[in-house]
Length: 427
Image 1 (cartoon, helix red, strand yellow):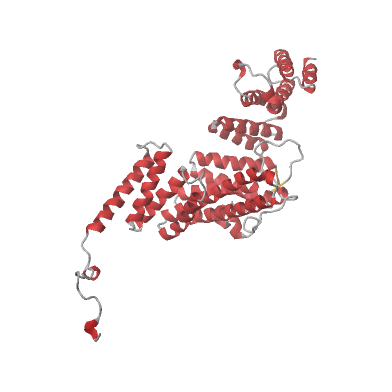
Image 2 (tube, one colour):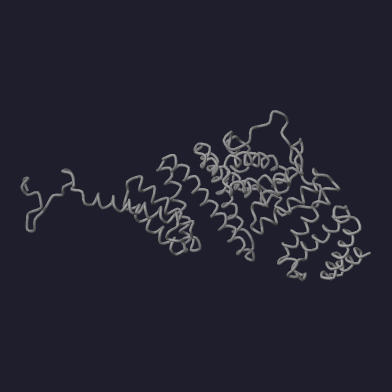
């Protein structure tokens, strides 16, 4: 049959011939059996898997798509209805297919369709039971991130708490054969580490679900592993912190942000330890990982600083923003970035509130210089805000400078030639 011929071409690495032959087979099967026949779905998934593994080696006609990801996405979507017709709406294989579709939409930058696909995947994996599929943990993390991008803060809290709860339940399974981080905060199961009631989901009244290792060899690109676990945990805590901050739940925001900061420091220290103990051949990769880890620390400091700032705890906010600025300035790659500009703007605002107008003006001017260097429009909302703060700081600075000194601040005037020692007092 054509399918067998296509598989033969694949085995001898003639991928273009394999794709062409299998496409013809799918067209014949659709005409003969209908678009939702199981054999059509199976053949479409076979073709999609060839593009997934060897798409870069296959010629892509302009009429069929521009990239291998385009072709994969088109084929997975085509396979969806036949698969649901065969297995039903609720089935792990259907959920897995939705995950791949969501991932590919995300790579294309279509976040709304990616979000809908992940929500459909959760539905396909079924209602929560005593056993949770590991893909479900990853999906809840992605849904939390998508909701954060959509600024649906109440929904972020629901999804984020669920994601956090499942992440903690899955940890023992993921780290059966992997070492924990150097520190203890991220690996602790204490109430402080879990964020207590502030960031974790309410504990179920019945026995909590158990996340089990997948028996299938198939793993989606988003499935969380021991290597990506702490990054997923960090991102979830950051999303919860941002949601609580936006909803003015500042104590809860501080809890989530503080835990994410502890975790970010542990990841940075762990990566620094790895960078100093691995062969020289891996130096560049380790340096990149370390830079990313430091950036996570900076962003965690910024998020916590913002929560303190909005609570009007200005000195506590300074203790977050000043170290983040120091970290940014320690790297030539980061000292001129918008991340640095953001911290400078926050410091300018803080010093304005603390009535330290000279420091405020200096930080705000430097922030504007970085905005200009990074191509931020001078009419951008953030630029206008910084300019308004700068004008306020400069005007207050002039007022303070022009005001006459109080009596106790009037300096002693010593005229030229006047005796300035204390001889009059018995010298």
